[in-house]
Amino acid sequence: MITQLEVDGIPALIAPTTGQMHAGLAFRVGFADEPLARRGITHLIEHLALHSFGVADYHYNGATGVEHTFFHMQGVEADIVAFLNGVCAGLRDLPMNRLEVEKEILRTEQNSRGESPAERLALWRHGARDYGMPGYPEWGLHGLTPDDLRAWVARYFNRDNAVLWIAGPGVPAGLRLDLPDGTRQVLPAPSSTLPVRPAYFTGDSNVVAWDAVVRRGAASAVFADVLRRMMFRSLRQEGGLSYNVLTDYTPRADGRAVLMAVADALPEKQDAVLGGFVDVLAAARLGMIEQAEVTTVVNQRRDEMTHADAAGGRLPGQAFNLLAGRPLQDLEEALAELGAVTRDDVAAVAAEACADGLLMTPGDNEAGWAGFTEAPSESEILVDGIVYPSIGDSAPRLTAGERGLSVTRMDSVATVLFDKCSAVLAWPDGGRIFIGHDAVQVRVEPALYPDGHAVVAALDARVRPELRVAMPPRDPERIPRPPTSDRDAGTGSVLSRAFRRIRGR
Image 1: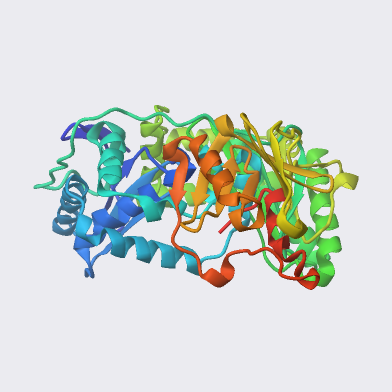
Image 2: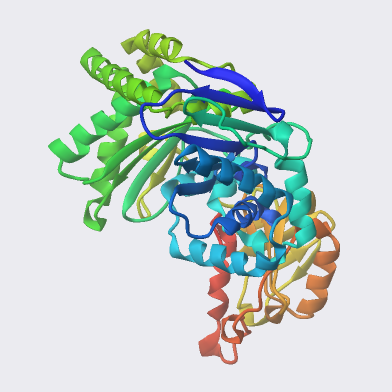
């Protein structure tokens, strides 16, 4: 049974646990709240708030997600009190002397991790805003100042934007959550760059991935597990095409949820895995779902939910619900909702998901044959303005106008409008990448255009200062230069990246 109360003005959820005591402090702020030009600010604050703990004998951690940031600790009461009190103290007075060191740690962390299918799907579905932010590097780190961090803390890391959960006998003595007053922050509305769904785009050669946004609830969670079983049976057991198949169900605060499915593929089996993957989705869309599968999944989820509740494992999700203004759901209510799920309910979710689906195909494989429309990777408009041909045809032709800028090569167009610009990456040598809300990028290298530095200065003047992302100096050998001979012509082909909605670095 979950007990709801307040601790120092912060909503708190308390529930007994069969295991070791653990507790968490969550805030309603995550990647979705960050402008692209400030990407990484929440993660940086999380790291700074935890710096004082160093190496400890107890288990603690912090995590920044799409909608929430939380600090979690498992141990005895005294350790939990010291940890949570210390987190609040760290947020009130961030160790700014650690700022540059923590930035380097985060850049190293980012460099060591690859890009996940979920991040690619998020970028292509939502673009360079809100729920598309996980698909981008933490570009904002380099230019963040102490004043930037203090302003972000004041807005998001306050008692009115927080919730506490404790799995244990009650509120431990000595707990003082000393946070300033503030305002509960609502989530941004999810954006979309997909004019038509279902849609597809080409991705890595070793994986097929798919996601869909559906109504949140037990039926959708059950469908995620049913889909995984269908994929495992078809792609691994029967076809021998994939080794790893997985699905995921991620609820959102707006009453929707993201379903994701992934299957790995050897290069020589790309076509077969894609075909088998699409066949499984088609079967689900047509309602070819067995009652026995639904019953098995419901029973498994019932056991998992019961065990999690006993250990306090449901508390974080309920805390996030409280932050979003959603009703709390005790175990009996959750089990009743789960038990009421029918095969027809799951089939209805499958149809809804397939209609909204976004598919990442392996390699250069297309999916129009399967009813998916290619997601737009270029722009529909070309701005009016002054045209700047590149030197020696080493780069796309640049057009700069009052509304924005475009680059064109043959029949391809990439355009970023100034009033729909998410960020401008700015290098000291004058290189620029303009990124639109739709994730289309326009790259301008001044050395490749006549009067290029003057053109860049004029473009900079048209973009709001807060959108500018100061990038560290580049290795001179990595700065594009015009060709010095006919043989070198075309060396600017790296700029063809401007024609694709990609996660740039």
